[in-house]
Image 1 (cartoon, one colour):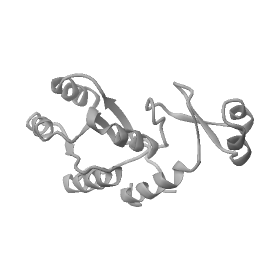
Image 2 (cartoon, one colour):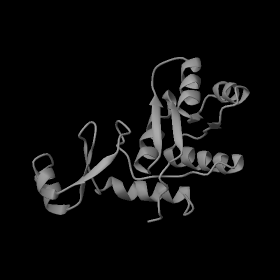
Image 3 (cartoon, helix red, strand yellow):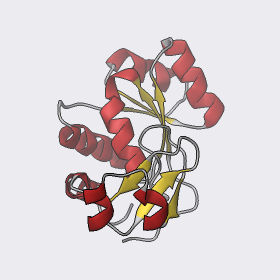
Length: 164
């Protein structure tokens, strides 16, 4: 696994791209998901928090650009297509995609490693028997392990390239 930078690229992800926001968190990007609010509100959040806007709304992307904010217009229907378009656009803008450690896909908080014994009470017995490494969200308590979903995530992660 490539070394991770201390400061990851921070994204503000609009309401139409929730699945992408969850994937970016798993890949180690600080990704705030703006589910409710106005265009002005999401642009203000980007400015206030120094975040790059990810949107599939052409008008919103153009509006961000007019205000001097970094915005990436994400296109495609699948997670693979959306992630690929995001990476291409970021590179064309000269934006370095810096990641840190994986984050909670639900709330964007940091994860901490926990022992199998600590996780055993909260996971199905079949999971406890097959896995030894678990992570818990520092904020919401969600548990994670490298299960079947991991392979799909790893195949998508290759789109980010080795320089991320």
